[in-house]
Length: 282
Image (tube, rainbow, N blue to C red):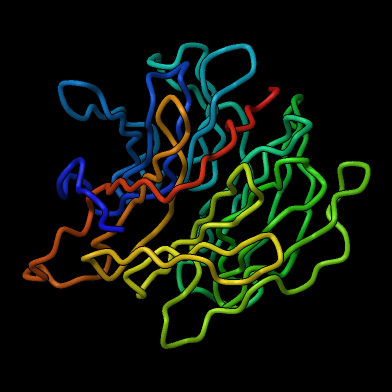
């Protein structure tokens, strides 16, 4: 499988892609710029949201979107409308938000990381429809990809510094029984963002590994998609049939003369299909 570059290197730190028909297809963030990007038929547009960092965005059940900045949750009533600050997630300036998703009950899961990756300085938070905040996982280092199995009975989670994809059972809406699902050897890169396919397979971006890997529901490696850039940040399934895997890449920390396509979004058809994104109920 050879991915196609569909945007060119228009972002510095492309991250957190998501497909939602109601907002025109594919959106992702340029994290350090604080911008939300949208792929349109005539190119890519930007919407500035947070002055420090933009971690990710998700659709809302009643329309519009939710976006998570460095430490602020934003809401927009229209998918292309202005996003307003709706809640402060925490006030520690040494920590910022990093990645997240929504659970089957419509609650937002949002993870963080220390700017210097201090071990245990971050957490995974849960934000309900009334914007109440609960700590789901304390003492995290770099909270990254999180997603739910098609039947909602399992959740997959990455704290990048562990070098693992972990899996939880989901019982009464809570995450229980954390255990290892797959381990990434250090020489192969670090696990970053992930997405789940309709067949239960898990697809994970490898930061520093120039690849996306697919694992079946038992944790066995079933596919490797090589990218022409070192820092592969996240992936999501999109298009009308959810059969295209869109992959974000980053130039964060690379020298100015790196000479790669880092910062581009790539697309490939891996032979499996995704599941619709879970929207935020708030």
